Length: 291
Image 1 (spheres, helix red, strand yellow):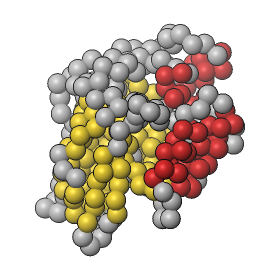
Image 2 (image 1 turned 60 degrees about the vertical axis):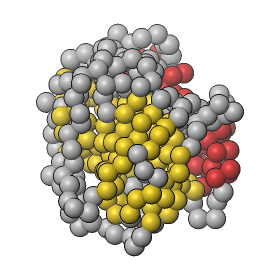
Image 3 (image 1 turned 90 degrees about the horizontal axis):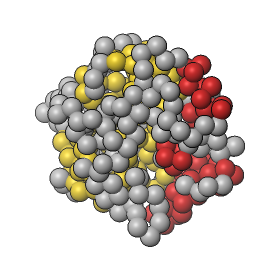
Image 4 (image 1 turned 180 degrees about the horizontal axis):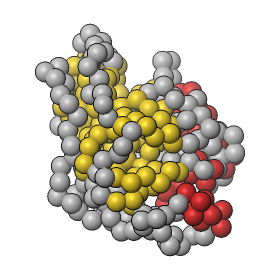
């Protein structure tokens, strides 16, 4: 899952974003929105509260880790233990592609993933979505599964399940994560704004925004992947990054962020559930311009 970012590619500022000092743009709020702050340190997280009411949750994520953080919200599927899900994570982070593929299949079956924030210091993001009554876990996958991480925090969502009819992403651009491992963008992406991220596929996906040089094309990015190169790509740009972490099929959430205007590439590195190849290497990347 996140292994691909460090083992396969080193685009731009994956390990050292430039602080912008700006807070992410807020998703539209109603009186029934609950706010939750998650602070990550590169393997551990702290929550501003451990119990919230079911309904719309607005989760703001920041980090002090110089290498960035990948904060994920998930829960085991009905009848599945947390230990089983953690074992699935270990498969997903394996160096063996066949084991990676099995990890993706097992995680898709055994857990439900609700996104979360991929952040670098100085560039927080906010994820807004509806959560139903259940016990969830919050982790920073910057520390892969093992004896030293990730450390989990529990989030209890209580009360009656409430689905807000006033979806906070109404009017925002939409990025769909598809079954043919592609990003489908509808609407204009803004540098300071919100985007609906919807997984309309049958497998796990995430979406990261990484800065690249103006004029960069998807053909150039694919050629770089196909070359097997390990060094910094010629189209890389140092700058802050942001993203929505892993979503299960059928999930959607609103990602709010503040980034410099310019050219970015959307990336997903979840392992393919048949080959174990990271989705980005199979073509799941899309160059966009934030205006």
